[in-house]
Length: 155
Image 1 (tube, helix red, strand yellow):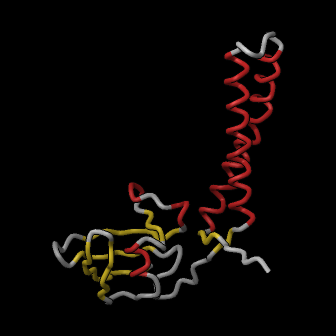
Image 2: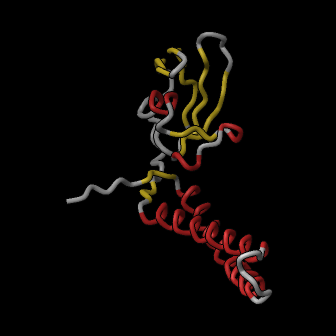
Image 3: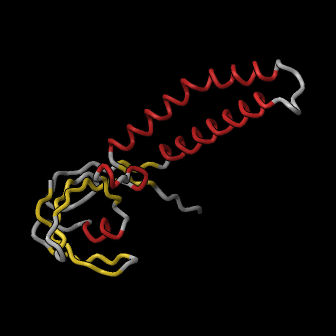
């Protein structure tokens, strides 16, 4: 029997994927019309408009397949508001070496964006934080070495 791997994500991440799918599906008829118009121009071997329109439609179709697969294998994790860190938790940490603080939302892989303070649960820092609670100090094993962080607050 084949094992199925689910993609863990927050309800917000799931909705973002659904919104992307809806936007791409709205755009699809326009891309198809552009391809038909370019095909009508004649000689396909030297028709740049046709080649470009065909490539853009293939890219859109590929992206739709990818996003639909993400939705199909999604495991939406709803935070139960416990004091332990899980997907969807907002956590404030202090780096022990320089005492700087940072606040992150723990999210699934595809949602991660450090510019928006969204930390992937399977990143080195995310893995160290998962299941911990406020007041704990954890060691983070990263590719560049290890460091300690203290968890200040969990929401």
